[in-house]
Structures are given as structure tokens and as C-alpha cells.
Amino acid sequence: LYCKINDFIKGEEYLLRAISICDEIGSIYESLIWQNQLAEILSKDKQYDKAFEIVKKSVSVLQNVGLKEYELSARSQLCKILSKSDYHGYSPTEAETILLQIIQEALELDLKVQAMAAIENLMSLYEFQEKWKEAYEQRKQYDDLKEVIFKKETENKILHFTNKSELENQELENEDLLVSLKAKEKLLLDLLPKHIAERKIAGEDIIAESIEDISILFCDIVGFTELSSRISPEEVTKMLNEIYTSFDKLAEKYGIEKIKTIGDCYMAACGINSINEHHKEQILQFAFDLINMSSTQLFNNQSISLRIGIHNGQVIAGIIGQKKFTYDIWGDSVNTASRMEHYGEKDKIHISEVFANNLSPLKFILEKRKPLEIKGKGRMQTYFVYKK
Image (cartoon, rainbow, N blue to C red; front, side, top):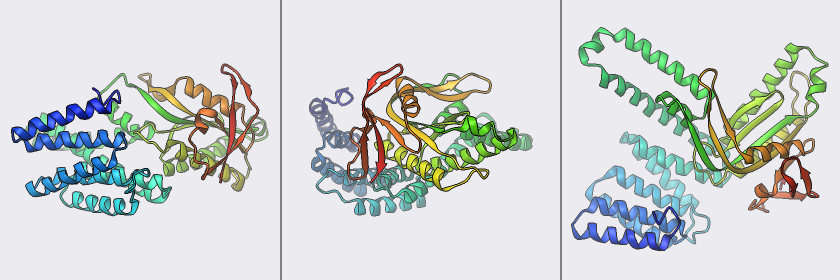
């Protein structure tokens, strides 16, 4: 409780008491669990040296008692500390080496959960270093492992509810069921974010969640209404398909979640699937590539220009409807992002002051605009952002 409200002093006090009790009664396993939680709290409080020593000691104990899966998890936790850029022992190269070893060992021992945790840490490390290709490769491996686990769980559920004789008699039916499940799974994964699709497959009807902080992007094709009036409906459809297919490929590259398209407007977000402290930089890289693509490529032999707006903040996300359902996000943050696009300019990325906060001056250049009267928002300070 104290840790959840960021009272780290009280949290540390009670965790130390729990560890002391476990040590007194000789409960090594429970003591290690509390020690790892203590290390997490100390890391959040930037007491990295103390956290590192606790986890290092846990690794040594786990190696001695032969609890391999927990040892791998503890080593992965060590790498999270080594990956902290404000830690004096910051060593991304060492963290990368250890994480690659953990992934290899975990896969050899068929410890998929531990492998996924290490892959997720390695993916975050690559994203922080802007090694987008390596991060994308790790994301693919992570998704592949998650798919294997999901399929295994599906098969286990079938086996749980069907005895051996029924399986023999209904082998063909079960095969058809698996094919049907896979087809439904693929369709849902194409339509919804992965974690939402999994909840839908599990049978949840009402799916809604509050997400504390994500980046939201709106991208509009400048002058599209006038352009579409000059070409046939078939050409309009073909052009939009080419444009949005290219956008989708870039979105996948940067871990961006496409929300929806509304005519010639493309809406996307970053930070939906998991906690991601780099979502601002990722969505900016995506936006820069969109601008670059629009200025260098032709779509159905037509050139285009884009107007992009970005904001970040809290949203509500969920599935709407039972038939032809859609995944969407709502809230003031979404409205603000839309306004940033509306009040932006051709071939520029327009961002709110909230989004501009904490952007690295080593990576980005901000052009301060005169305060704007934004419909529904009042007077706002906004910026254009450029890659340095």
C-alpha cells in the first residue's frame, strides 16, 4: 500500500520487517520474494546501489539452491538497474549481453515467461538507445512467444473439458475447432490491440480501461477533399489504401497502435499495450517518417502533404458495440490531440506544451508559436517540433 502511494520510506520499513520475519523462520523463498520487491521500490526511489546489491545477493542464493526460473528473473531485474541512464553504474552493453544470455538459457529450458520478461527488458533498452531495428526484432520474438503460450493455453482448455475417449471420437471436430479459433484469433488481433484481443477471446463482454499516459497522433491529408473530387471513386479508394498500408507498416515498425481512420484522417497512439516511458519519442519518430514518406513518395501517381498533431495524457479505452465492434480511446487528451492537428500547418508536426515538456533538446528542436485560441480549450501555448 505504501509503495503504491509512493511513500517509499514506509514501504521500505515494512518490507524489511517482512524479510526479517521470513529469515527468522527459515523461509528462503518468501524472503527472496520480499527482497525483490524491496529492490523494485529502491529503484523507483533511485537508490540503485542498494537495489543492485539486494538483487545480486538474490541471484547468488538462487544459483546455490537451483531455482533456475527465479534466478533468470532476478538476473533480468539486475539488467533493468544497469539500464537506468541516471545510475552511476549505467552499462547498457553489459545489460544487453546478460539479457541475451538469459533469453538463450530460458528458451533452452522452455521457460517462456522468463524469456518474454528478458525480451521486454531488452526491447526497452534498444528503444532507449533508438535502435529501432533491434527493438522491432525483439518485439516480433516477444509476440511469437506470446502466441505460442496462448495457443498452448487454448489446447489445455480443450483437453481439460474433454476426456480421452471423447477426444478420440471428436478428433476431426476438435481440429476444426482449433482452425476456427485460430481464424477468430487472427481476425481479432488484426482489429484490436493484442492485450484487448486476448481478453475478448477469453470471453469478456465489457472491456474498458483507464490508461494513465499515452501519446495520441492525428494525421490529416491536406487538400484531400479537393483532390478526391478530381479523380474517380476507385482511384480515391486505391490511393487511400496505398497511403494507409504504408502508414500501418511504419506503425508496426515503431510499436504504434493504429486506432482508426476517419476518411482522410489517420489516428494512432503509443503506450497502449504496456507501460512505455519512451512513447513520446516513438510517436515522434513515426511522425517524422510519415512527413518524410509524404514528401518523397507518390500514391496512385499523386503527391500528398500531411498535417500532424500530437498530445499526450490520460485516456479511457475500450470496445464499443457487440456487432461490428471497434476499439477506441476517449477523453480530453484525445480532443486536444485532434485540435493540434486542426490548428497545425502543412508538412509540420504540431504539439501541445504538455507534450513538449521533457523532450530532449539534444534530439529535437522546438519552434514556439504565438499562443492560439483553441476551440473548446481556450488560449494554449503550442510548438512545431523538428528532428535535430
